[in-house]
Amino acid sequence: MSERGLRRALLDVPAPDEAAARDRSWKTVLAAFEAREPVSWPVRHARPLIVVAVAAAVVAASLTPPGEAVVNEVRDAIGRERTAGVSRAEPELFSLPAPGRALVESGRGLWVVRRDGSRRLLGRYRDAAWSPHGLFIAAVRGNQLAAFDDRGKLRWSVARRGFVGSPSWTGTRTDTRIAYLAGPVPRRELRLIAGDGTDDRLIARRVAAVAPAWRPGPERELAFVRRSGRLLVVDTESGALRWHAHAGPTAELEWSADGRRLLLAEGRRLRVFGADGTLARVLPAPRGFVVVDGTFAPDRRVAYLAVHPNRNESRIFVGRAQVFGAGPGWFTSLAWSPDGRRLAFAWPEADQLVFLAVPRGSKIKAVANVSRHFGRTPRITGWCCAPGR
Amino acid sequence: MGVGRDERAWVRGAQAGSVSDLEALFRLHWPRAYRAAYLVCHDAAAAEDIAQEAFLAAVRALDRFDRRRPFGPWLHRIVVNRAIDWSRARGLRDEVELHETAAATEAALPSGNSHTLASALASLSPEHRAVIVLRHLLEYTPGEIAALLDLPRGTVNSRLRRGLDELGERLREEVR
Image (cartoon, rainbow over all chains, first blue to last red; front, side, top):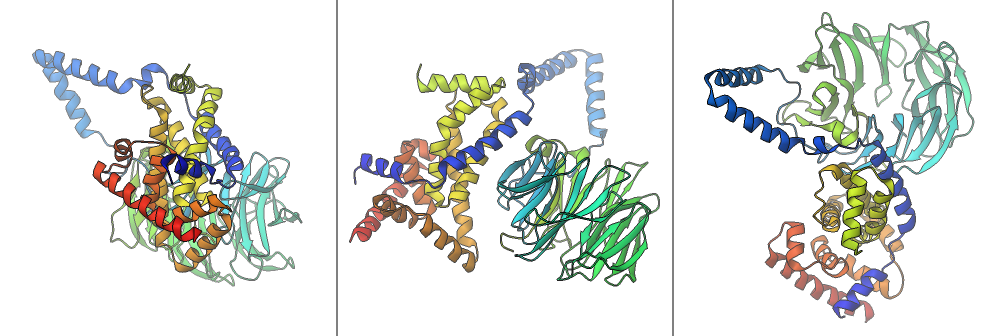
């Protein structure tokens, strides 16, 4: 085959779905383009301008004794400066340090990040949650609850008056349910909808702004918190109350993967309950700290995040052991990798995403300048199984 | 006005915030970027992701982009390197997934002569597919390919020669 023949043949190989792929990608590229902030000429050329200005200042300063003093002062000030963040952070998220796909939410919207670091902006969604087998995503846009695949192809959406948020998805491959919150405070409701967007119904009125949590397993048991401060676990099929307990100012509810433990991150402590409501464990926050997030590893280890409101400082614990603590800044959004070897969190003041090795043994991995790549204050809100699980 | 001058004007316009100029760049470069990714990784979904990610990288780097440089090679560098990485990674996945992917690839392959070429190309290594696509679809010289892939020029030449030899053999087997 001649060179020209080969080129013609390569051009003749039909690339499947090309037009639809182009249209989908154009929407994503356009969204990213519109979300970016155009940079003016002085800002675009800031780096060379700063280099020139600093060089001129150093030359001028070094020519005179008072100028020399100024340079030393500046140098001292820079040397003593307290900076936030993990040192030697990578400049880009080149890859996830553990298997799976991560949902990242930022001011620009919702992203899916794959293990190899490739990422796709799905649009201006928030409160995203994976389906039980990682095939779909439920998320919120304005006052709409939507379900789509990890390429952003919309399957269905429903609109509700006022607020919509905190979807939580459970079920088998053929039968799934999404619990979500809807309606204005103080009449916020807990509702249930089938995974195909049908059979929407009310479960409870006057609920707290805490994401409901499905108990993994064949039963349709759902944990949620009422505005009155009561934790309830109910069978959503029969409506029967399984058990209840008092709940403080709750930040997080989550079942372990085996459905045998429920954690409640509340104020000054984190409590762990058994499946029948018996109290299994209490993990107190250090003095002056408040528990703001908690999550189970796949093997049922508990990680939680506590912040000190006055000292602008954060600490992360796995069980009773502190695995990381630093400031300035409050960390957010703890997420275990699907293999339970990495614990991710966002450090907004450092503009970093951090991946701790748990148990320790390999290096902490951190990625810097994340708001430049993802949009304002990105955080990992779900780290899921491989496709098909 | 030539394509090169058009392209520079579109890059300048996109840097200034013009959606229509960005769209012109996208429409000019999408087909070849997508096709190149598809011919290297032989997976339409992956090709879409790779081409899209390359354009998102372009949007992120738009303000720093030097307008004197052509846009295409910069984009193709990202596309082809990512497609090679993706194809290598697929080779490391487990057996079940490979069987599923192979079946899906077979189903997605076109029929007729183009099927023959597509399946022959799919049997080469990703590195060989990449240099053939860069040379014969995107029409880069071996020196330019060496720069795009960060390889010595001699390596590019030997990969091209070996890749074309293997492709010829596969095509002869297919038509037998």
